[in-house]
Image (tube, rainbow, N blue to C red):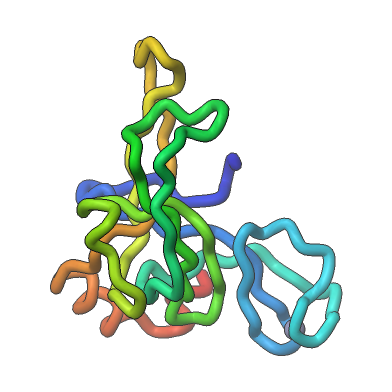
Length: 148
Ligand SMILES: [Zn+2]
């Protein structure tokens, strides 16, 4: 998904890039909707989403799906971001079985092998446990800065 997330900085953190409804302010990810699911307005614009969210639900995958060459088992979660967007993606940074619903997470970039031979890697986005630094950064962010 090109353009789905910002380039990771020094801390390997990244913001997902979705859509924001100009009429009601609802946010979505991925940013491929033709109209708002909350108010049906077609006026959607690209929006950088907040990094912070909570795990709403998760499951542990024990079989690698086709085209996936990363470690197995791995956790896949539904994360609700603090700005309201909902994202389904991989949960990283701890043992898959150790995740709990309601846990604070932040978006990060990470590398996965591109092929079974692991000759090259592809940059992906996922959510890892939020660090105190992540939580402090989110408190300093104004809504205007998040929307940029
Ligand atoms: Zn709307």
